[in-house]
Length: 93
Length: 162
Figure (cartoon, each protein chain N blue to C red):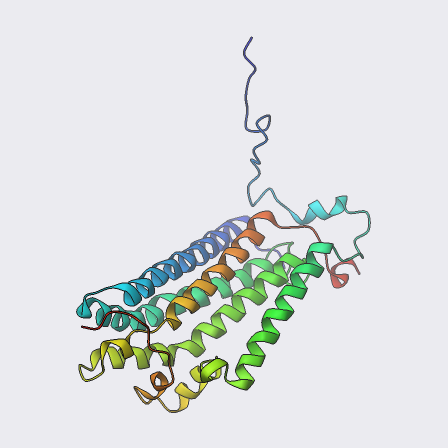
């Protein structure tokens, strides 16, 4: 006898965004505890932001960091930005 | 403040279209950047860097702001809230940061387009790996934001549980 396969029995999540409500957190018995994924994710984001700030302050390797773009906003010389850019080792015309 | 269901769905539709559209546009941008680095045809290379500037200005930036604004409206107009759930906060930070980086990158794209338009600038100087790097990292950030929006991992802030 063939079993009836529905999305639910197949393990497929059929809930829509409208059905997913914040009520899911009601299952969490200790809402005050910060979940582990938040700590890990937050740590990674802080590292990424610090790296960005470091590149911003130092100018990055070969003065190629994010600060370069801010400099371009005040002095939009066409080739000044590219003067320090590494030449891509590609075919010449 | 809770939005009526009609406006909630309308806002959600606009947010999904803008966010996924932004991700798709970033993927197209990455494809262009790779063509710019690898193509043998000088006209194609110069054309790629010329088109990146208006593409970012008139496609990426509007999509980024639409995604950010609809996301804020959507969170404030539903029970999710802007500062109640960690996933919403992370998504907001990712979107705001990606928009900020995009805005600061616009002058560089403009300078690259001007160099590409100048026949006196040699082709190796026109080629630049920077757009590929930015588009790749941007895509990664937007994929993470999309995953957060779909999975909605549990976890409420202390502010919400007060």
